[in-house]
Amino acid sequence: MREDGRENEQIRRVKFTKGFTKHAPGSVLAEFGDTKVIVCASVENVKPKWMPKDEVSGWISAEYSLLPSSTNVRCQRERTKLSGRTQEIQRLIGRSIRACVDLEKLGERTITIDADVIQADGGTRVASICGAYVALTELVNKMMKSGELTENPIIEPIAAISVGIKNGEVMADLCYSEDSTTDVDANIVMTQSGKIIEFQATAEGKSFSHDELNKMYELAQDAIQKIIKLY
Image 1 (cartoon, one colour):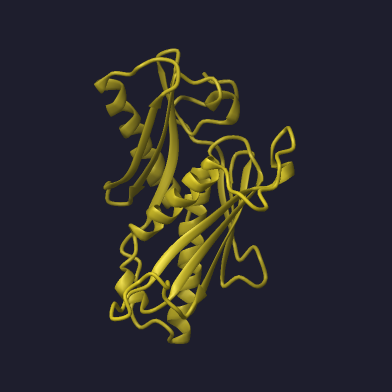
Image 2: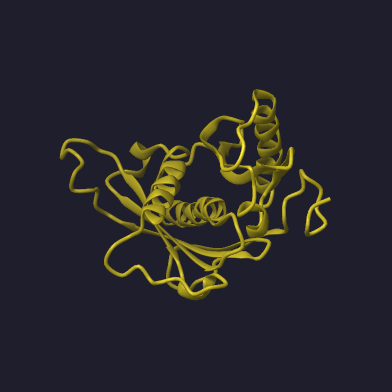
């Protein structure tokens, strides 16, 4: 039994409140326990400047921010230079969402995902990825309804979850107190059909075995299916 009374395979209460903001065409408040992230999706009818002019394709990028009072000790607002952690998380969100979209069906458009953490208690990047998928579907549904898109570019749902090993126990969906003291920390992004998009696993205190790796995968796969059912 864990600190908060959960079983090892049990995820925290997960909730998605769609249409959370007024102006963004796609928005959601994603909650994983006490972690809360506002995620918005917006679109511009231009493709990135670096993309070849003869390429008819869209693009999806992401921006991530940990708001100053989201943690127990106020963090500095990143105004001019992004930390390495922030850049890594932005790229992870972008890669994850692009993996579930047919970019050619987007046409010459750029979708931007904005993930702002308003309260952090572990798993902010996985909550951001799940929220990004929900916000994207809200945006796409509106574009399909208006006729801006004639084909749905989303290939299949995706979700993400954190998994860790502590004192030999494999646990899903780590809160901060677990994440900060775990022996192994992993963030896993998968499709509904079980394909892996990202599998980040790091030994923080101890190395881990192949059997433990398989167990992390199994717990993640089960948790991700549960999350997708909540979309």
